Length: 119
Image 1 (cartoon, rainbow, N blue to C red):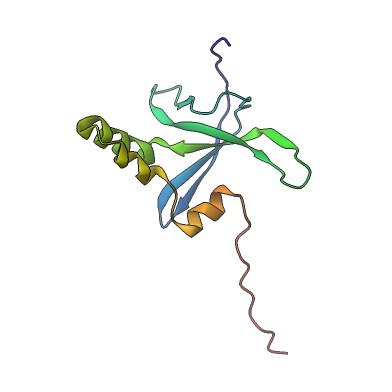
Image 2 (spheres, rainbow, N blue to C red):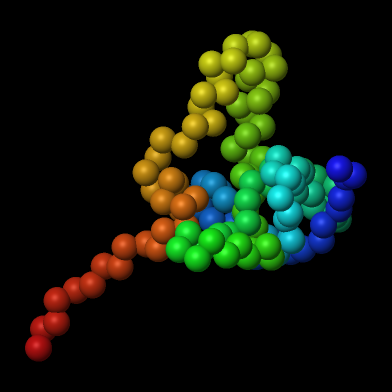
């Protein structure tokens, strides 16, 4: 498979407790592109690592222009620590343990909080 370059814009940065945990883009990410670089074309800076397209779990339809990336600010410190120590166990911290972040990555809607009517 030959390398490819995709174009798109950052549509949204999703945060959890003010920490970016997901970058939504309009790039048409194709199968096999996971792990590719999300680059800022103006600065050539690495923004994140491509993960997936949005997919409807019921119908199986995927939406190639709605894709998600892990922000490099999450990955870089862990990889740097691994490169310094050589300890593979350091990479376990990439496993998502936070329930709120897991729900964000599963694209589950937030629970709606409704108040009782005063009528």
